[in-house]
Image 1 (cartoon, protein in one colour):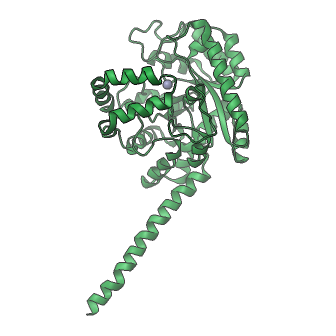
Image 2 (tube, helix red, strand yellow):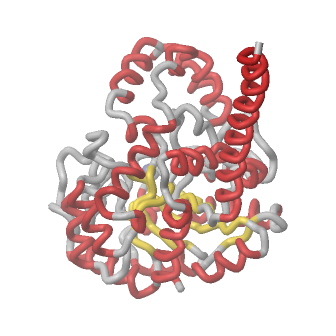
Image 3 (tube, rainbow, N blue to C red):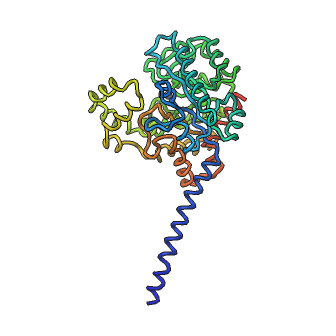
Length: 394
Ligand SMILES: [Zn+2]
């Protein structure tokens, strides 16, 4: 009888204990995430905005808009402008980028109570302290400057604060990682001049997408810290877009920072192959969807995901894969050199639990579960990028 009474008493006590523990865990990560400055080093959201998607309205598709950024506690978002180098004549790349900056500026103006452009790290801190999101303008691919230092300076005057040196195609002055036949063995003399100019005028050098030879030439040439705005760890996922241990060590020595890309192909070495098989299986249907929805990126992605259905969902990596890449860099060089570089709206396959920017707090939860200190988490979420931003741009 006594035993039964004891059990009746103890079961609710245990339940209460676990319930309180779970509530306090949830509370802890939310409080920490809210108090931290959260920076995302890379998104392609402008590609949706130029199709007429409003930044201020919560969308069904895509990964970023103001309501979801607020929900995800995003304090600073780098908005990258990109044009495909093969789809436009080179002479029009700069104009297209200027048009994208126009669209971004209009959207920031419409949402001026929530978001403002930061031209310096100090300005970003003031914008964030006022309760708004700091937007950083960026360019992906040096083809945008059309071999002209003057055009680079014009972009700088318009507020561009980082430039990814190459995209997937080599330039006249720098080789890209995706290029199977590198043309220069790194940077040309003009390429080095561009790097030095970026140092002089305060534009951050981004090494995501560059060939390894270009990377080492940049490390040798730059006097400022650099970023890899959206790259992951080669040793965990041997993809040409990822960084070797030596490259990660060099970025740490340089005082730079690596933004971990959430794209499944860069996180999980098995994903790319599985996805290729799936795309090949539905090639005709996917092509038809593209023809119908190419003017509506969000709808195309939505319809494509519906088409691929459970087969696609089952191959998406878990959120832990993204955290593994953060963890690897921290263990290799310390917590001062890693950050978030989502590639939101630039990729169609994200880990489970990281479907859009509103889900970013899940990373903070995972880092706490892995017993990261609050200081380390704050550095990773945003402190590291702010350090580089302030050092290069003031
Ligand atoms: Zn990219």
